[in-house]
Image: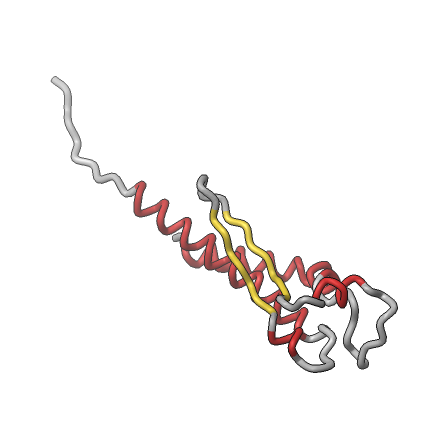
Amino acid sequence: MAKYYNAKWFGDDVKKKIMYAQEKAITLGLEFVKQESIKVVPKDTGLLEKSAGVKLVRDELGKHTGYVYYDTPYAIKQHEELGYQHAEGRIAKYLELPLQQHSKTALEIMQKVIKGQIK
C-alpha cells in the first residue's frame, strides 16, 4: 500500500526571494561604485556629479543587468579625454578607474546582501 505525504511547494516564494535579493545586491553594489566615482568625477559646475545614477534592468528571462551612468551631454567626452585639466583629486576616467579599484568590495557587498536575504 502506497503512502501519501502532504507537501507544500515553496518554489514560487523562493524564486521571488532570490529575484529580490539579486536586485537589492546589484543595486547596492552599483551604488557603492557610483559613490566612489563621485569622489573623483570632475566638478567644475557640479552638474556632472549631480547627474550620476544607477539603473537596474531585468530582461524577459529574469537576467539582471545594471550600470552606473552620468547623464550630461559631455559626460563621455569628460570621461575619455585624458588631456583635460581637472582640480586636484578629480580625474578623466572617473567611472572606469573606481570600478577597477573597488570591484572586489562591490562584489563583497553583493555577496553579503544575497547571503543575508536567502536563508
